[in-house]
Length: 635
Ligand code: COA
Ligand code: AMP
Image (cartoon, rainbow, N blue to C red; front, top):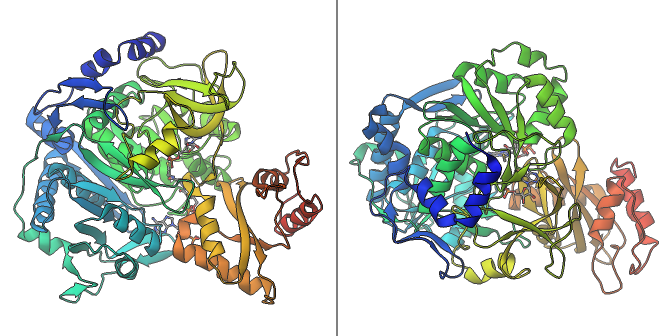
């Protein structure tokens, strides 16, 4: 324990001393030359010259320290009725064996491996196995369609694709093989091979030979035939993984995470933010396809010697809204992490918390929420139900860990409902206006982080330094642009209010409206379109499309809407939750042709709005409002 303000101040004044101390907690093959290399381009690098292995620090280090029998991973799958426990020794052995199979598939240090797997232990094992041999993994969320998988394959050019025969959603089994086949057909780059983990719920038909030039193999057979391999030291600055996230265009950004800074910052965060120690059970109810899954299902808890939980289920419906409380009580979870939308889903089905009352939650100390702003109603409902700290914290795929949080392991700060509390160590957060000047207390602006970013934050985008610089470092020279707008209050608390770009947040998932627009615009009957994120009481936001048809198109609107919805589902995936479209005669625009998306959002959300002075044709907003009312919006 200590004092947040002192520690925070020290982290900004003496970053090299601060992070070098934090790095001592890990095993290094070779010590770093420079803690912080400010001259590196396109951005500063941490622990240059150092060598380590992330998998060694997450697994072998604990076994070698005599904790091999401690629980490392609990797989809890209500959708298959399965539970499995892995000790640190067992997990290390499985990972070493799988790493042997990956190496036998021709993967070497620096090669990429795409992982398209459901929430099964093999997903974590695959990530760690890549780390073990210095390969770079790129996990693709299972709710993305084949085209998204293909885009990522083409961008990172993997040697190997690791997948499973199926994923299991409560209402259906998702056959992965056809999706993988389609992605391999669409992708220009063909991985050398693909290993498929057969699941008994829906095995895939595996014909011997190659599909689209890719050798398809059985995961279990490949693992059985392999020899275990040891950890390979890699440079601290070498990439550990690439994780794609939505940007402002249809092309996702490949966020790069390094090995050294990532291990150091994540290890630090476990004790200081979440207040968990080796042996504690930490559960992030997310998916390995998202950054939360990377940082706090796999790497963070294991680097800290905790027990992590891989949960293959939902907050509700698997089988009921008591699912989360069951997992907490059965596995003795000390700290849980999820998205506010999951709590809203539970609250909707069990407002009085009757399911919660059935379980012993005595070992739970705190609930952390992130992925979207936690609305005050959800926060206070969870606080009253759990009678424990409920902590909103703010971060992004780009940073890999919290930019702002309430550091329970240092000093619990008073909770202010609606704010993710104060900046975390190493993050010098400033709120800037369009000219780059700092906004006064309480005034909204671009939330930026003064460079250098702390360890674990992205050093660049995969194979695209120029896009990295353009997207994050150009608007305000000397600062990282978070893409979020908000303000700082007199106590130094941050208030994250909205995005400044066209990213929307659907059930804690980050989506680009521009990307959905690209899909709609590719329909032969669509002349132009706009997609906006409208408020939804469960998912936070939902995408809504407004389309203008080409002259002469006389199709039934219902049929066309169904086609557009299916097109987004097929090309982006069900995770886009795109289910609402309206056909309109024109889109509201400024006289210079800019679509007035912000005004349409305000109309849909029933917020007060003013007629933009630059609007081309004010009458169109009446038609938009009527269309939104027809979709059920009270505007
Ligand atoms: N593979 C395939 N499809 C998937 C999928 C996966 N891994 N995950 C979700 N989908 C599908 C769902 O089945 C659903 O399909 P449908 O349109 O046929 O019903 C669609 O994608 C949308 O999924 P989701 O956003 O999960 O909505 P939902 O209505 O099924 O569930 C919640 C709503 C709130 C229960 C759910 O969104 C949830 O648990 N959210 C937690 C968010 C979270 O963990 N965020 C990560 C950041 S912390
Ligand atoms: P992702 O990269 O998918 O994690 O999404 C990051 C974005 O989600 C952020 O830039 C914010 O817009 C939003 N976000 C995540 N956590 C919070 C939070 N606690 N409060 C407000 N917005 C959040």
